[in-house]
Length: 637
Image 1: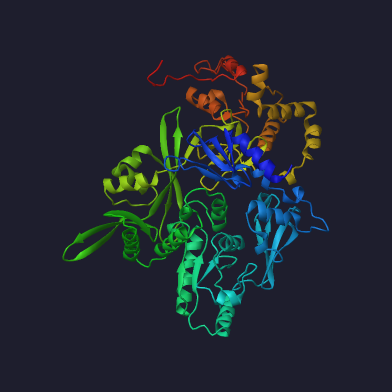
Image 2: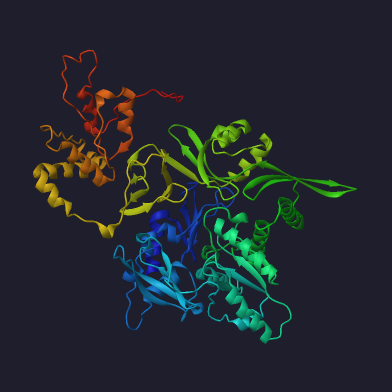
């Protein structure tokens, strides 16, 4: 079965498309709005979208939706003498959506070995200068870095050029786009038909490349120079180095500008290669396609306001573009230097247009997503707060009431050394703009197995349908069609997962120390990970009682079992030393994980004034029932 066929079958399973009309799969169920409005290309799909663009707007890449198909390229596409670049070709073509005609002869398939772990993975390698850059294509998550430069090589200052692009052709270009990565340069060349090269990173200034370009310009006796467009990735580094390189280029006589996918490099990662994948699956108006001329002009505008020197200059650029598009605006917020500013515009017959700018917050915040707990009927908003002068970025939860009231918002922001000085109306407009098409994330109040999502949430990793998922930069997991996170900041389990380093040599030591009893304890702890599944089949699940003389190793055994699960230095708790609320909360903090109760030797006659814990209260747990009941007002019964 070809990769394309596997992708189509996987998408059909996920979205249950009702129609296969011509070149499109249509009426799949949207994971965000629940309507049957999802569609994608029926041949070589790259992006899946909801057609309710205004009311929903959900979309995702095939790579994110079916990651298991894009991880072991060298196993799926075997390297042969006749085809030594089989896996590299497949990776570039199917995962990156790149035209191999722009790449053939510029790369090779190689093997990377991590000398610390001994692990290996196939790579696609590109020579640059007297060095090379390579990208791991086989399960890159196993390695500390997914891409590397050759140690000791000098590549800084050089730029990588796609096929059919030379210094002669660049010398004749109007604009030269300088991207961060190789795949981005090819994406712009292929999708937008721009003259694009790769700087390989944001940090180095491309001085060697520009020196060669000047020689090529002199050779054709051109009097002016091409304009340099620094088009780095979304993020702080891309914005910072764009400013630095543009300032230097202008000092050296170049006309240099910036391009950004989003203003100020904000938002989740979205690079030019991502836009190419969306462009290839676009079925809307041609002028709105991600790499159309209209959108390229928008990215240049985003870059211009990103590197604006002063708040007033930035405000003027925004107002000028609005007027050029025949849009009327009287006031708006914007960020500059990681501070929030407010701009108001007045039009006077005598004085003309007047732009007034003032600061409303000494930091800049952005709502990342909405946390919605349907059971508790609670909503929180998760914000990223950026501070000027390179202070550490903070991510924090704000209640719905704090976002709805200027005074409450000011108090909450002050907890992170932020100061809000705007009005309630200004806050309302900012929140309204930032909550459009906002992602919803479901908070889970326990560690372990979530039956609703069929997934184990184990701290910073999750397991769903046999696949391991790492928590993303915004602290939640994308699990199938759902986005979920642990509500608590506490990480009960700390698991350093590496399937290639799993060892079982401790089993012999466990048998030597504890014999059959040690294996029984191991079996129980392993069984607890599937408690829900076992109770579904057998209705109940028994307990394990470990007894023995003092010093016989009971605590050591239990602590070792917990360590295998990722919890160090823990045995359990004494139910006689906690309140009823503490006990019930301790039980509901986990699912499909064991609970350890410690019972020390006591003289019941001397402790008769204290109520002792009655172990008969645990009987309901045989069937997985809740150990505690509360009355919650819900308007029902």
